Length: 374
Ligand SMILES: *Cc1c(COP(=O)(O)O)cnc(C)c1O
Image 1 (cartoon, rainbow, N blue to C red):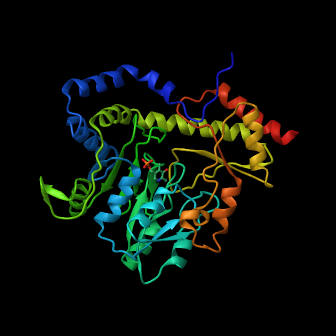
Image 2: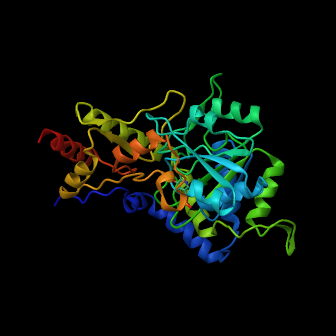
Image 3: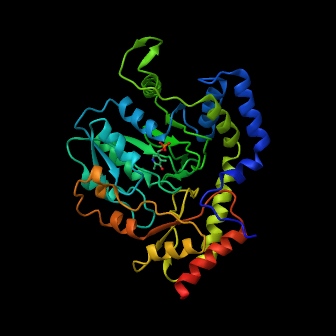
């Protein structure tokens, strides 16, 4: 029987590390330290070591991480925050929730990423922060964004939910992990993310001691000392059980990133000759950890290709079918965000995970090629 193809294979990944995971979870249950147990601190330290961040503060999920970041920066209602129009809604949602104003900008047409050219045009006297989103597994070109932010006194909060493990290289040759480049980095441990837990989870990164303190307080009801609330905060924690899972999986993250890269390069080789699509572009200044393998389908044939693949039992996903400025809740006209709009109409993500086999990829690529040969 032919194996059912999935977008993401979490079960296959679990089976390979089952013994380690089961032991880690059993240990948490045995200790019954479900909230802020020792695994939470251990995982935060291990992730700090892995990424080179001075502080890693775990929290409940990636959306919370973004919200806590903006709260910790002390932004005021009416302040403007620049965010790309082509991203997951969370990046803009938290801005609006806090009474700040999301200012949506267009993105680079090859990498899909936040681009300094569009940020420059969006700045006003009320701009306070920029949220670059490292989409699909590679870093935005951060040096020009960081220089611009420094010149204008803006905060940079990286949305690194999709690119944990990617490394950015500055023009002078220094390298750093995405999420550790701006004032605060945010990530998500949603199960399908590159480092995913078995439920919800997230974290913030910063090198700034004072900011780290404010982030910790904000995520913990605004208190430093129990029952003494100095600022308005929220309640956002990483469960001990999730931290235990993440502690195990972090040890495999580099191996997972390699598996994703290998699969992406294999897709490239298999799909290179196919006329109707454009393959993903890897920027020269970053490693790519392929959270998604996303092609652009030419000539308005994206939806037809998606349907054709579905009829052949090959799943594919559209990340994202509507740019943020076209969403009902965020509609702001956003005239001129042409690239975001054209990407929403042409992108298609193929199955991408750590367990892809040559046979499965050949089958997928064969069907993609088959569609354009009809
Ligand atoms: C997944 C994701 C988030 C939100 O993470 P959750 O843990 O689901 O809250 C934010 N931004 C981007 C770009 C994401 O992909």
